[in-house]
Length: 263
Image (cartoon, rainbow, N blue to C red; front, side, top):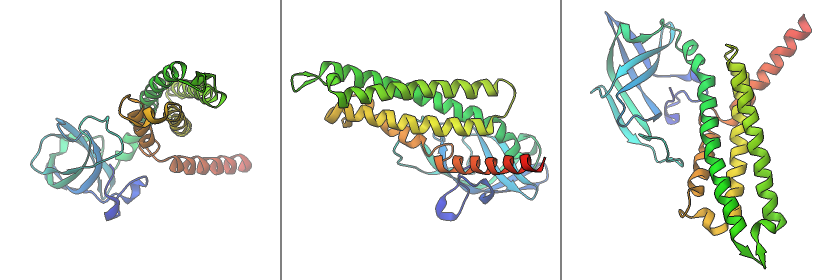
């Protein structure tokens, strides 16, 4: 869904979407440019979000298609996503009407259903990454000696690993809580925002401390810790920056207060 910021396209604000679609007989014609399209290289199928007179629409498209052109692959801080993140041009893409997902104008509604599980899956994936970083940093601190004793016996180092352990457990509990809300059938929009913010910020703290514990080794490519640090830094942006989630939660707080006082 994301579009180039240089063109004023949609990012955290989906209402700014510029990619358009119009019906032409039993087809829809789509035009626009997308950015940060993960996995575009090598993909066999894609979902395109575009704006019609009725509102946002979602289409299932087969790839490759001559009307869909990868202009460039972005050089991003993270590197673990298969197919990378691409800028993609849609030039008079014709899609059969029966490949629209749902009804015209209800694209955002359908996307919302998948939003919370997607946020949670990111939380779980990158939590696994920082747990591995913590294991590597712990082994390093227990085996590496300085000033006559293992690094872990120095309070400054040992405390960082202890703080990581606390953060990891809090992340696990937050993920479990959000998953339990989803299990009730709720969209868990607010809950997944809270989980995404809490977990992504905690993972950044954990990864940063792992790098710090390992010193020069931590910033080198000798272990995967350096890569994990880069990956979790991107997570604070992907699926909505921390600040956008906080803004959304603040709106909910105000709305709930208004409803409570009006009752």
